[in-house]
Length: 77
Image 1 (cartoon, rainbow, N blue to C red):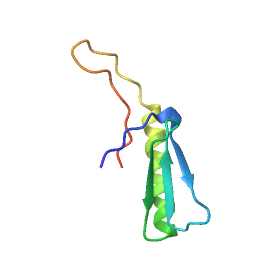
Image 2 (cartoon, rainbow, N blue to C red; image 1 turned 180 degrees about the horizontal axis):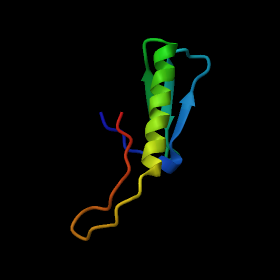
Image 3 (tube, rainbow, N blue to C red; image 1 turned 45 degrees about the vertical axis):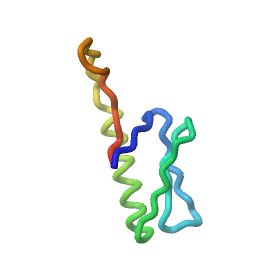
Image 4 (tube, one colour; image 1 turned 135 degrees about the vertical axis):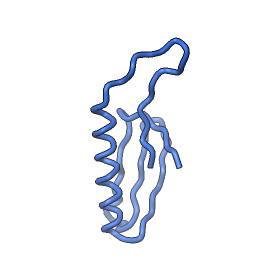
């Protein structure tokens, strides 16, 4: 699936009481609740998402082309 949220407003909400659940949330109120098999998988997912965010954040944005939409940074999970 594809989740489009602005990177600058994306937060990972790790529910401490839920060993296998966390959510991705934006300032605009959009969110995605994620449940995995166990705590180890949860931590793996969170670290991979954080790594992807850091990689996306470090990419230079392409200049806008008048014939195409402006470049967007997306997190695809």
